[in-house]
Image (cartoon, rainbow, N blue to C red; front, side, top):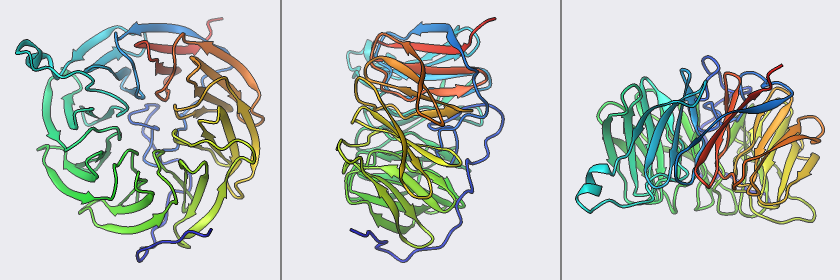
Length: 382
């Protein structure tokens, strides 16, 4: 079935590849504005554990790495800043601490929403529906923006706005200075995914099966595309095409210039949803699914180049550094795969399910597990 745009399309050129990102940081979910999941530099052939930090509760989100520090969340309500070098804790932010003393503290605050760091501020959403802005140096709150339901979308900074989706069926543009909504766009279902952005538009998939192009300045919906299924994965962007998986067991490539589906991929035998977001290299779409497989697809044709099978489902989005793919699995292992062939080169046993995506920067790969441990791996010492 050929899917089509349902509104008049505004032709906008997209990034030719991974969006430029200053330095070697990983400051937001999937690192860059195009959500490519590509690190700035390789990590090396052999990795070893550099440090681990017990955060006490399950780590469901992807850490951010900026300025030599790691920013990570855990249940039920902890945002921490740690040294990337040795894991030493700089501060710990607990938004419910005051309420706890009064007997009003609600647990399960931070879930899948990953921190974003920009301009000396850390932004992150929680499961009570609040978007937090926290001073990156001190850990003190700057403002809080409440929505009507839980936030699993990760915040994205675009100029003087923070873009965030909520399960209250709205997509918001929040003023970075005041913490007030500049605009909101109502959808027909929860907004789970993180928006990619380029050339003045935010591109966001939805649980209402709609891909939207939203003008960042005022929240006007410029296009919509019928994805055909519930979509939790965020779109990766390159060369006028958006790539993302759906709960209809497909990976889609949507050509926004032509206003139509470019290709769709479905494994011939294993039919399971895609929850994780794809990584995007110059030639490949790397999609990890609940079918226990990592799929490497040709960006031009959608044909499978290789697949790798793990022991359990992939909910964590894969990342790429150099010629290596890094994929965390619910079986508690971080798999290191050869980008060209899919051959397993090594695996790290974390001891508990890895549900949040890894962050890679400055010679480290950082990820958390459901037992509440944050791990940092780096090149093996000679």
